[in-house]
Image (cartoon, rainbow over all chains, first blue to last red; front, side, top):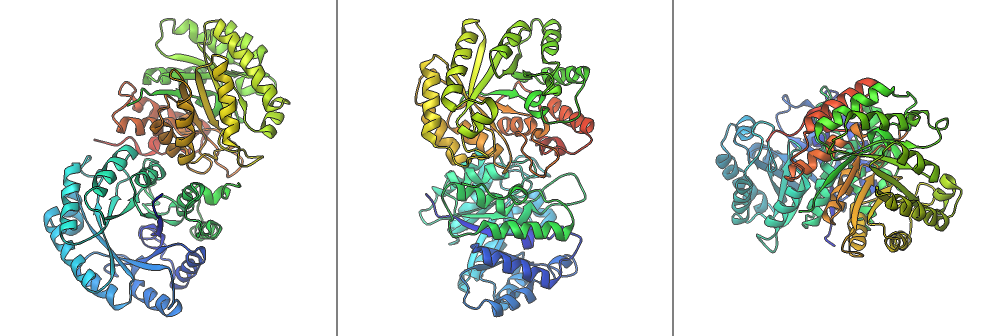
Length: 300
Length: 300
């Protein structure tokens, strides 16, 4: 059985599309709840233009506050960074784990960064090397690794070649992100297996969106291939609430429920996550996509 | 790669809890749509007390009608049977494939049949042997095979011993049904692998409810262990619409989407299923749990 770490990205990926800006104190309340659950990693926010993404404008202040509040924590606080400026902010406010990535899709890369895939990969590698130099835990992802909303299929070899560049640069914690939710479990199992075989000390992370309902199955497939870090958002939040396309992440309580039913991650109290997801649902005054928070966990 | 057959149980498991009785002609329209999709097996209805389950009261007439309408069909029409009387009705109206089962949970068995598990298994075996004698395709299930809403965990050995009895009686098409939705993919993979090893000519079917959001992952796990028949309901219909507990089956379009992304079941046109699920959603005037019918299938 592989070691499993649960990484909640609800405060970042879950919230970034929400129009209602969640106040600082409410975010702190949700972070407390996540910490009470004993979850492994909490993504507190991203370091992006404050005007462009008002939902993330308090990221620096949040990190400063929780670093004061939890000086002797076991939990890891992560933050998403897009560029050198973001990395500087992240380092300055005491992020434990810095996350960033480049897309395997040329169109997605151009739209997001105005760079080709190769240019974006080279730049991300430099940022990663700076982060590692600073002694920070650092996770580097390949976005749109399983398909792209703009381009459709993405050549697997393109993903492998980006991973090879990451490995050559000394990066060891690598994530594949299914930005569009296009992944299927056979593809996930195959790709994680192939990538895991590339280095003995590689650690794999995964990030699946649930657009086509494959999220949990894809997490399971990544588990079968030996992934260690699993990202999810509370209640399955994420994506745009104004279309019928439910493009949120897998719900944290659902993911934990699955692994706990395997007999793994016994340290996490899923009841805290379920209460959190109910709280988030109440806050946004709508039902969230998650299953377990609605029905409670399985009684054994 | 194992051969995959998709069995739509939407007209039976999907509808049986719906208060709005779907008219005969609407059911025929939905059957036409399923046939147009080239799906492998359609469960048209169940043979139960007409007064107790008005939604299923037209099962005999439906079979008679579609037997007239599709005399040279490739599709298989299945029906669910609970007892000898039901089997007689099924045979009389020309069902191609008869489905029935016994529960692995004593409480569930007593509530459903007023018999112990052993008594119910013995009775089901007699019905199966009569069905096989009549030259009918016959699928026999173990219900509550992965856990029970009343009892919680179910001893795996109890499930295996029921399967052994089925095998001893000459039954070769065996289904495990996750009546409560308690299954997790590791358990599914393990149990299907163990059961598949029991006989060279055994054929395995699966039926997963989505209560805790594990349905697609469980189908994938059954696939990894070599299951052949996969049940699902259009739109993920099923369970009680008056609670927040979404206990429907996996949505047919989602299941097909997954297998088609594996490069399997190329004969089925999922667009027809997606249109059907939109039609069913319109008919019941509510959003159904399925994902793919809302967003369309993945463009490659």
